Image (cartoon, rainbow over all chains, first blue to last red; front, top):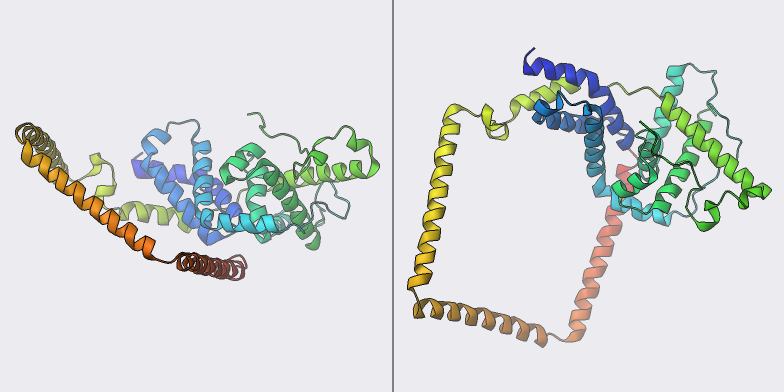
Length: 174
Length: 176
């Protein structure tokens, strides 16, 4: 198999993962596609070492996360500033929380609702929430990546969960 | 792979929210913790059950188009045209030779020149000192009030621009 064909196979295997990371962090498909493109250009430049690497998935996820955060960084200081100011946001939900989503919708409809809720979250909640629950980073790693304090990461994630629960409840799946 | 994440210990990380032990025996606080844990479990379950988003079909074509459109000098050396590789090697050797010759010449110059070189250095030093003195004189001649006013105007303009930028960001960007 020639290099291009091998790289195409490689892309097929990982493009959904890279795109998912970018689109969930940015909440914007156009930006996510640009970022995914950049990730795969970097992968192509390092393909000779990556093709045999057992940790290529982790490498791609890390690069996708880093590039997305770099992309968001020009706004990050601003949303960090405003998330500090927003003290009125709830950290608790006022309704009972079930273990799972209501199941009278089919799976694809529920997924669509969850994706939409995620997209509708304010960026300063969505980013730490996605890093924690989707990218499975620890609180410390998130604090390091976003260069914010550990208590602030915990607060933002908790507020993000509450905001997300409210959006899901409004959509009728909670 | 083990999950590196710790269980929720209370968002906000404040001292009053960190300890589950004593506080969780208080009915209201225990309810808050239960709600938070339930919420964390729910969102975690939702995240885990969500399939990957399908990348747009155009992504692969875009990546290959960009790879093809890259100029030859941004590719690896092995992929450069033969002529470019030869020219680069010749230029590199030429540069090394020139650098070495320059270094030798500089060392010779320092060794042979005595008074003339020192004089040139002195003259340069005096010019720099005179320039710094003049700048300091001009700066000291400006009344202090003017300086404070200048700083205040600068700060105000910065604050206005920051506010406008933030307003534009919040109304135009995050609403998308």
